[in-house]
Image (cartoon, rainbow, N blue to C red):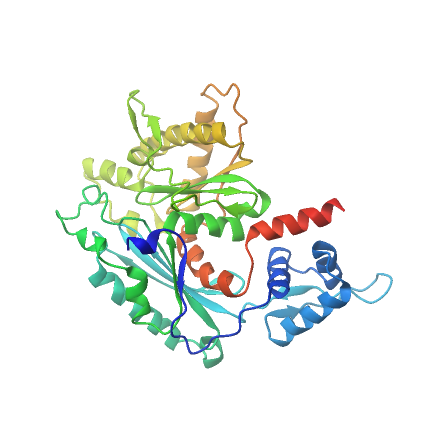
Length: 408
């Protein structure tokens, strides 16, 4: 995966159902309707600066192609009734794949961002011999259960996977050398060779950050630092409502960030604020850690070891937030992960409390908030890749368009 992992890639080979890529203004209108459900033609004209006639033509075309659908007219105002417009969930579908170090997820997502079907697999460590059948056979099975009209509207397959899967093999308990195979495997090409839909690839934490930007709390914050806690913690950076991936595609990979642990020793953030650390805490106490990986939303309360992990993670996250905010004055720090909502709530509250114990002089403290996409953020981010490539535009343009219009 070496070259394939240095940013977003797509492979358009194959594909029997290639709906035409939308023109820029059509993409702009689709993106704004997705961001502002129920907006009218007049709202779109105001937000974009396009003439009402142009907007009307575009929206008629999008409605004719069944990408948009009408709501009930709103009456009672002067002139013609306002007609709210919405994204048609049935218009486009995509598959999203999350590759983790302990589990994999496959989702079928509709045009509105809702998960229609999903599959989950756990393992000791990721290996191509298990993952490729899970991805390809799983997609074939899900697609076979779709109606013909739905399967003809599949935009592609998006894979969210960690960079350099062969690293940290020891931490996940893989046998020596077992994960070196990933040095030679191009996962995107391997899936593309077996499937008829375009395949896209992006780093897993970056994908999760993108999902939060598009479908979650990120819509309210043009600048934020994002923390996603999976087997290993990862993250992302959003500036001016756009993902910032940097020169090598690894910007926001906050795992190596140096922080102090509760003993005052300097360690990497990932050695404290990762779920594999909780796994080890449970194992040391004779508690089976496997439930951590069965289903992210079905954790039990493990009691003392869970509370220790939450407090240690929160203290490390607070230091990471201060470090990030010392470089860029982020409006928010968003925390999410592969765990239930109640764990996320406790972790965010503990992080706020830990922040209050730090020296914050000279720091523009951001809002510290829960992510809204949840445990499937990486898979949803993956599924978003083909949809955005073919139908929508990035948040940078939306931010500029809407703020320009609002300032007029």
